[in-house]
Length: 238
Image 1 (tube, rainbow, N blue to C red):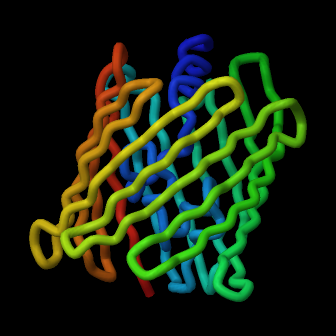
Image 2 (tube, rainbow, N blue to C red):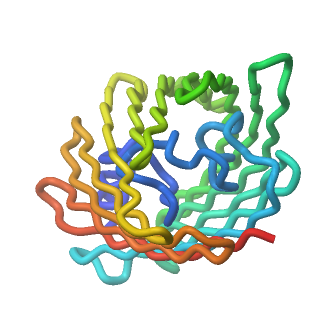
Image 3 (cartoon, rainbow, N blue to C red):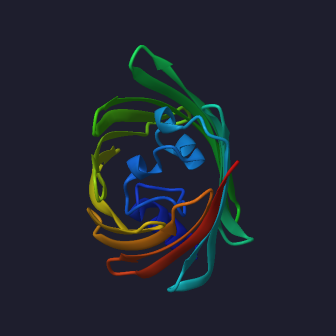
């Protein structure tokens, strides 16, 4: 179990997970409180409460529980990953602020690891900026582990179309790179369908969510050589 958890976490450069996360595109969290973990400049003004549960078909005891809350461009988030005995916990707080026509964001995260006899705490800082121009939003985020030599860099573009949105993220995580592309479709007035693909490692994604102030969501992703990951959750806009 001990090496498996490390393998799973290193397998995907995008953790924690969220019910609003499309494929491996952190940019898909635009306006959601869980953006505090990845791209704080995308934290929105609306008051929102989000919770989620992620399960793994190839390891029933391994779960991810998530909670996040945002108010007036300030957000907090918590994630519990693993089992009772072997787990990681993420705690994050961050904010975004508009300067002229550019949104800047800052967040601080604490990652607490508890794997059998190994316990550690790491602090991560994330800086991000984003700019919206008509039907386009683009930007970048940089995260640095303050306890050790480790960082990530994400460049993203969001295209806003009449039928949905396209998310493109290119993530550099230490010595690894992940490219992720996903498309959101407005299939019904209150229903959205999302499809996505991420490379290095290969992942395939499909998700559904309702568009309303109470927003349930469910998604399934296939991890190459591992199996399926199912995430469900709900977001409430006050």
